[in-house]
Image 1 (cartoon, rainbow, N blue to C red):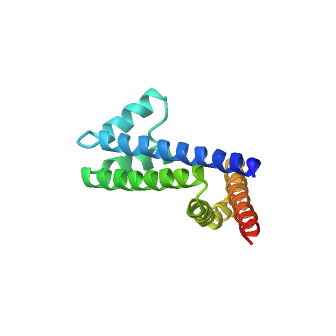
Image 2: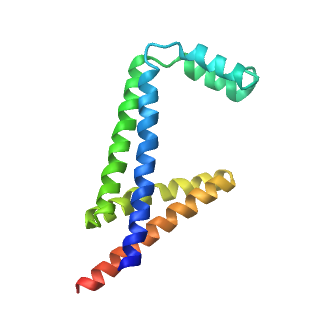
Length: 153
């Protein structure tokens, strides 16, 4: 079981890292409340030497013009909730809790159909890599659950 424990703990660290990243994003969103996001987006484009008249920069500017404090608070609240889920999942995995393994299987498995859809829309190396990593994590944890169940019988 030692190798299984190590694998599950690696996944726990990965989930905790994802939670930390989303927590930082949530804090960043809160820091943008009461700031001129449209001007900040334009300044960022100038700094990165991006042509603001092109399609995607225009989309960003339009989106930035419609952001208000309520939307930022809502997005940050969602980010904090998602980060909490990742931290709870990571704790459950680290402590080798059955519920943590099931939570990881379910939360990872939910994304698989969407990741497949994205690949059918446009194949990119990043999309394929994300799908493969997520599928491998889910498959590994299903295997861990099956091994644990067999060991209990």
